[in-house]
Image 1: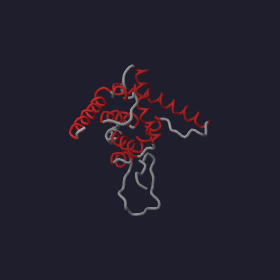
Image 2 (image 1 turned 180 degrees about the vertical axis):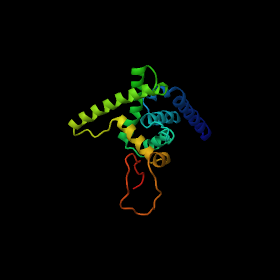
Image 3 (image 1 turned 135 degrees about the vertical axis):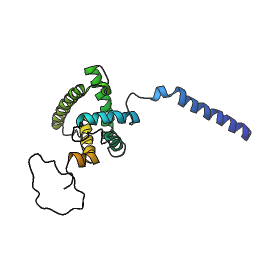
Image 4 (image 1 turned 60 degrees about the vertical axis):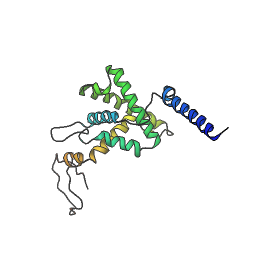
Length: 191
């Protein structure tokens, strides 16, 4: 066989494999579960965060702190493989719960429905944690607890959370060993 014929046959074969894998085969390989977060998921994460830490008349909520971007970064870069799997599966489970309870997806629910859904998820998480205590081998976290943890961590380390929701003083500052406290004062963002 001549070199030119061999290259032509390899090119045709390779093109066929690429065509099959790109056009016909994806339906066989795609799974129903999530394996990464998309740009659309950031909107969902913002709404999850906003339901956990809503906007008030004094300061913005988690959505204003761009919690969706923070959560995606943490999921993609910082969580363990197991926690990442739990988080991604949790998004699907939360959507399934919303459909089951309210016959609509989470983004279309009104604030009262979102709150009711999250109260149910909180009860599930408490039951899960209670049962996990009986099983010392289990070390995993409930997905709703993971949503809350990432929301709270992201919010209070954001500019809005640190300066509007809490009192903030730039560091380095003067050392004060005793600071007076009046009932109702905000907690310090830095210590």
